Length: 224
Image (cartoon, rainbow, N blue to C red; front, top):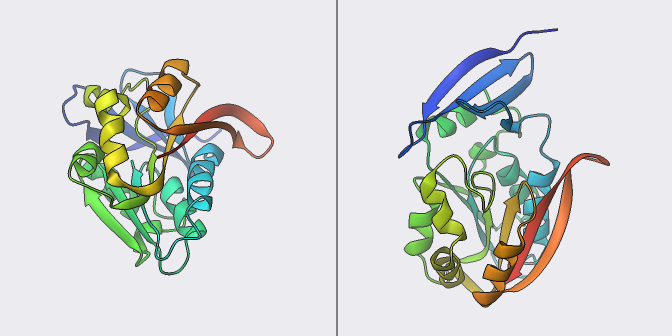
């Protein structure tokens, strides 16, 4: 078997941990230093695709829909959003870690089909939380694929996104009848209740890592 080779490291802002990018042939993996389990893998992205497909399907009837993807990762959620959006749609993407952007322009670029080269993309290097705080009625859909979901593990500040204050910021950032879509490794009844308390109508769906197999992940579709 081909051994894994570390091809990149990136310090997570505000944390002592690092993101570690490894490659084995054409397969890529990102882990957090000190953790055994993967954060993401280029062969397993069905639920990330579904996050964008579910969210975009609810706003396709709008003129020039604008969506925001929180967390670039390996580019799969962004790529799925671009595939789902019409030719006049706009996909904003916010990524906190500069090296992740460079990886998506370099070794990871082919994995999701070079989404950063699409002219409909607006790239924001920085915290998606700051973008939400600064936005009012800006997006038809906001997709949060940040960290591991509501139980944030890579960056302590990510907890704010899933707090009552973060959800209110997302509500303000959405246009009327906008959609907040949230990916999580697993379900969380407390987060569902928090969404409803914030004023969202909530639908829960699940999606698998791969077609017909693999782990099931949770996706919240919350409409304001």
